[in-house]
Figure 1 (cartoon, rainbow, N blue to C red):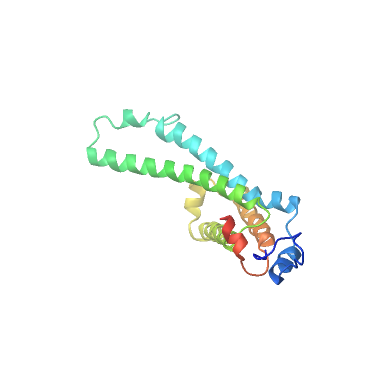
Figure 2: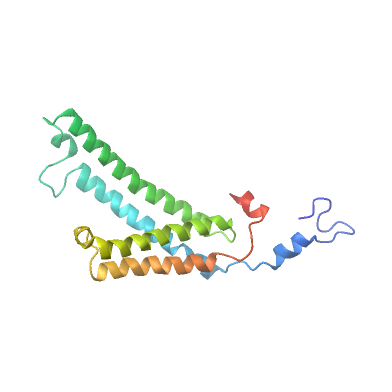
Length: 184
């Protein structure tokens, strides 16, 4: 907005920047809702993974090793520290996915974001798509071990493709402006 005068002041005229900002179309509610669905799904998968981490890895439900503290009894300290470190890392990754998906959902639902937000989202979903393709062609045994074969793989790849299309719809033409950068 013009810093010298405000709308309503005598003799006020919008600057070129004001005119361009007013002409920029803002995404409608439906596009905004659809564009955050991939983030919501990532958060749901993250919550499922975090709950499974607690139940299976920490508490040992469904395994023959029992809870972590029961497994650690009598094991060498180095092995226990390594395994507990991996356990904590897995838990942090699950919690991180949930936290990032919440952030991306709330940030992505806004009418305007800096252009780099959607570029980063496009990069993340592209990397996931590449990993799915590489896993299917180069590591079919690993994909079978994690349960991504047949219909599950197609479903996961479809979700990633959907996410990339929706993110592409939200990427707006033109450069960033200072107002977008000020939003965060």
